[in-house]
Length: 127
Image (cartoon, rainbow, N blue to C red; front, top):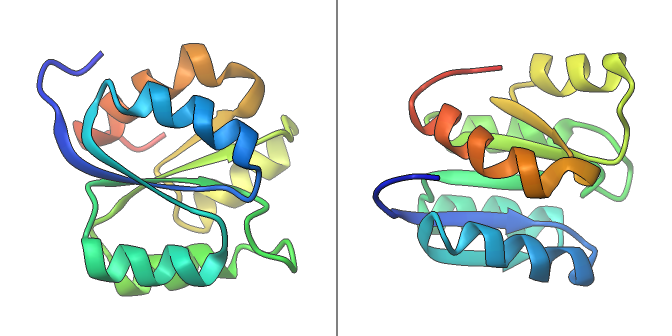
């Protein structure tokens, strides 16, 4: 767990039930957790808020593409991005990391893996 709270994290997921639980975890590491539920809110929020980290569901976009990740990188090049996914196939992880994610966390492992991933990306380590 981080020793000092970071200022802001942007949490983007269309599944409200999951985001409430993840928000509770992230509140232990960040002063502010901002939740959004769609691609356009993610991009606008990241541009306006300049969060330290974005935690984003891989399937946030309606078309299931990774274009949102490229757009996010173009708007906020220094932003640390952790992708959440239910898909544990190696090719899905590779595609997310190749598209610009700093870390990849399986949704079934959020409780054990999310905060360590936050620590790693905060320290500049890319998966």
